[in-house]
Image: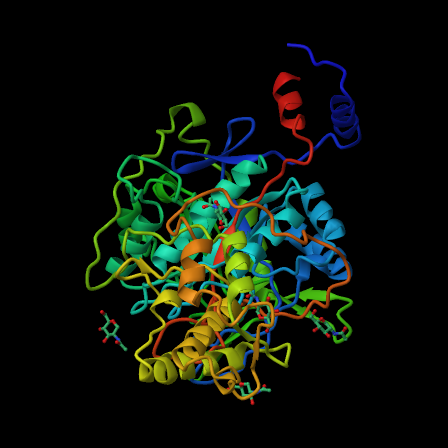
Length: 569
Ligand SMILES: *[C@@H]1O[C@H](CO)[C@@H](O)[C@H](O)[C@H]1NC(C)=O
Ligand SMILES: *[C@@H]1O[C@H](CO)[C@@H](O)[C@H](O)[C@H]1NC(C)=O
Ligand SMILES: *[C@@H]1O[C@H](CO)[C@@H](O)[C@H](O)[C@H]1NC(C)=O
Ligand SMILES: *[C@@H]1O[C@H](CO)[C@@H](O)[C@H](O)[C@H]1NC(C)=O
Ligand SMILES: *[C@@H]1O[C@H](CO)[C@@H](O)[C@H](O)[C@H]1NC(C)=O
């Protein structure tokens, strides 16, 4: 077939001429990854994230960082590191948090030109993720994820977007339905913008039953009709099982557990520091990139390019591959780096099975809850921004915090109003709560946490005869002058604004749009141990403080016709 000479086509032809070696698209066929030419693709990479600041405390059992550095917006850092990444012989990096207000052109384009893909976590530290113990799938997290995608959709080397990292932990799996809803809605969004980026999740390792249930649940179909609509494409396991020069059978149990897995599995982090601290030998790559492991897994990401300290039971380990000079101008490889480069240098990719012979995935019904894994197959709805805005405009008493960092206050206030004030008036916070174990989602749970709190304040105000003193909350609340005193109740407003409480639909980009420039770069973020718990206080009711999810998808549709040109050329 011939092209018509549209402007788009000539632009693409030009792009083709000036950049002959455009990076190939990577897609999933069944449980394997393939490039456009039909070759099997294996992730051979490193995680690439500066460790954020960790504030230890009872609120932070997994020692999650509360700040982050956007390494993909650090042009000088990328220029400094690119030769090292090439020396390592990698094809993929993973970034744990990015700031969608910053410009990522320089770094993303340099990585693409070097043939390096990015697996991008969509979460931010603290409240920018689905929380482990107080999970919600609400407009604020959805918007944050979409803003990041809208910034990165222009690049051709985003392999996947992670919707969460280590959100589910061994006694806390109630967030699973929220992660699945995130996968569903982000997948629909990616399709709507013609992105082929994949959706991933990075799981903390744990006992077999827990690990297997998570993997199965995240790629199952709750409707029982073999639909992929809420399934992840890419199951990442943060695996530290291989230590030092371990025996080649180390992964055997894992392999047998995943031998029938329906989508792609890979190691989203690997590289234990426990056996040869500072001089990891990385002999797991001999096994990881060879049969039988390659029947089941598609490679992995060595943890971590930058220094990353973890303190397990009093022993500090450093997972870095390089040491930065005090002015950040140079990055000097250490023994871990040299050994990894040597191991990666030996790897060859077996093109087996071929894309044509790879069986399609099937998506079975979801596992039922058990003692190891308690998560309902009933998922929360798609957060509806305009429904929440409608509700906010009709609430008589609004949460109006005086400080910009209002997360801690929000936790305290939610606890106060939900655990004490409302119950004393025979009210409850049921409408703003959600329970992933039972599969029950309050009408207002999909809304931003500030709207949820305004809703609870308004209910208290109504139950106390609309006394003006009931809308104060130590100076954190204000009467909404636009709402008349005879206006319908908050509950009535919720019922009318949120008219299809369980609707699932394709979300759109948030109003106010995407990337600008000149953001502050503050935030929080990931690092070694992945997700964590939010800074929010633990109330009796699970309400506040999203934390910890990663969504992933990427896209690469900058020049939609380019892929077609390749296949026709
Ligand atoms: C967590 O779950 C494991 C396995 O079910 C159990 O042995 C352990 O006691 C639990 N820990 C806590 C703190 O509940
Ligand atoms: C070096 O980089 C880190 C992480 O980006 C940053 O926090 C630090 O301020 C930098 N130091 C200097 C001297 O620029
Ligand atoms: C979202 O909420 C608005 C406002 O109530 C409503 O008009 C719209 O139909 C809802 N969208 C879906 C898909 O339910
Ligand atoms: C997290 O909290 C800050 C204010 O402390 C807010 O500006 C930001 O939008 C929140 N992020 C999400 C995803 O809710
Ligand atoms: C708001 O609530 C927080 C948490 O309860 C409290 O510390 C603060 O004093 C309240 N008032 C204002 C004006 O921030």
